[in-house]
Image (cartoon, rainbow, N blue to C red; front, side, top):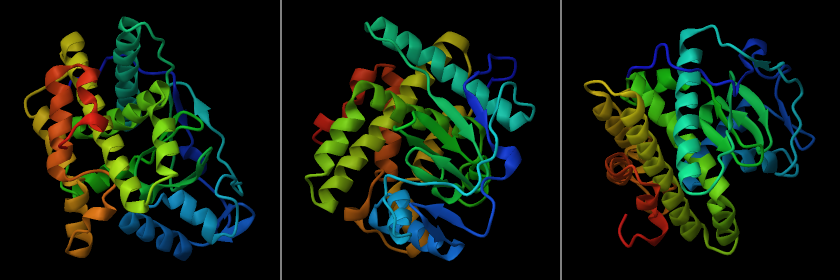
Length: 294
């Protein structure tokens, strides 16, 4: 991916220098949580399709909507001085340019998200974020959170190397921000509150596949405007989408799949919807909610 020398975003918040939280555990809703509890919550969330942030608050005996860190590293806003940080900043800037234009072309105004770099754990408006959760978007504060160690996990444990695969991950999370701005996220949360867990999971799959499609839309526009793609980049993104499908992850972790617990879609579905956005460049083609077949 051709990214060096391109504009860097000013919307990167660097919390890495302080190493996350101090003390022997993390406090949510007034209760202390150790690493063992965190591990239980992460595994349960992975297998059951439940938000680990909610589980952590419940296990701590607190309010899932209220969380307080013991110590927050001071955030740095401004130029990032390491290569991976600059890469992330450039990709974020590129998503800003693309979605700002897409929104403007359709009579809207794009509000840029903030991307937070952290290590280990950090406070969010959605609860305490853990590196083990992977990158995520919090609609309550309109921020994307990522521990850059996830890229090593992608490369070494998930078999998804490459800089464009890394860019795809950021574009996917920004896709959730786009959904939030469009009002889709709130509609989904409202609908899920009235559904069974299996039906709510199925709706989550449609949310995630749309974010995959939106990431493809970004790649289409970014390449048209700045010729960012190099030989093998598309294959990197397709491979990443396939490696993080629910079926692939569950087979790798437990040896079998539980379709009712899927929350992100199968490998085939994720590749299909990313390709749809990439080839069309049209966010209207990303309507997973009215698609009969995913």
